[in-house]
Amino acid sequence: MKHIASCSFGKDSLATVLLALEHGEPLDEAVYCEVMFDEYTSGEVPEHRDFILDCAIPFLERSGVRVVTLRSPITFVQSFYRILKKGANAGKLNAWPLCGLCCIQRDCKLPPIRQYKRSLERDAVQYIGIASDEEERLARLDGTRKVSLLSKYNLTEHDATELCRSAGLLSPIYHFAKRNGCFFCPNAGMNELRHLHRHHPELWQKLMDCQKAENKATELFNRSYRIDELDELFRAEENQLTLFENMMTPAA
Image (cartoon, rainbow, N blue to C red; front, side, top):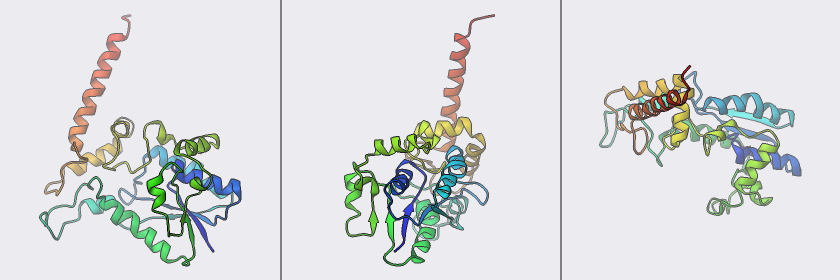
């Protein structure tokens, strides 16, 4: 019977792997699905991407855990520029994914995961990173072959964070985000978007280029803003901060 861990390399999934290693739980491999922005650009926020490649995967491999990386042939850009064939927006670009109805999850993440699962035997067990204090999510595991080791060993989300921190395996993404997600995720918080705007202008420009496309089914990047509106907002904030810093600097 094969045992696999679904691993985004966030705190809950890595804490699950750490528990399996600590308690001698069977674990054959960790499975990671990387969503790509385009053919050459990962959808991961760069700090998290570097953590995965330089820290997390080497640790798992040193610990004897095989890491399987999955990718869909469909990228965010391909999904964005896809022409819709049906519905009220037929003939328009698919454009931005909708909050709560993420076509990127549907088109770029789930297909390779489903294909991988079809390669497994039916009795394979999947470890899922759901903490003991996530009762509603845990209830959905009933009757499945999905297991939460965090629940089994009674670790909350906070406990998972501290376990990863103590092992040197807490992603730096948590310095500015509550969860790890694609840099183009419509559910990203404002602090995440500010970070992207300030520290990764090359990625921000890719989103700005997408915003320039015409005939889009959706103009809003998230529930409230277009990307160019966020750009104006963040530039205004940065200009105000610079002005304040200059005012506080003593004259020579």
